[in-house]
Length: 120
Image (cartoon, rainbow, N blue to C red):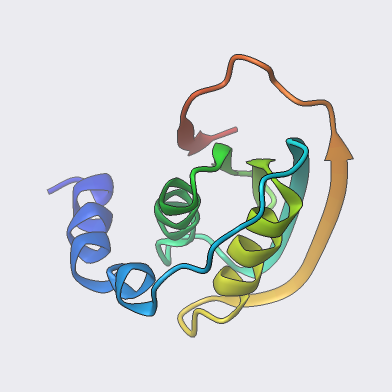
């Protein structure tokens, strides 16, 4: 079984918390994009898949990529309320140890329709 398949199985069992938590109603607003670099114990713990699943439940697009220095680069596109909610949720997941999170606004990608994961 590949690592991705393993994380997908874990995702199916553990990530249903977003559904059971119930999502708040978010106001419509301006679409923006942020780049977030996470440092800490964020690789080999299902971090990218958790971000992807949560972002998709919120209707956010973007990406989550492992970097060679052990950090994870995330880009989220949507309203600030949804981005903030996603980041707050991710910061509360106990199996990750996030020691640093750097947020930067970057240009919107107009035709983006999905969220991808991978390695840089």
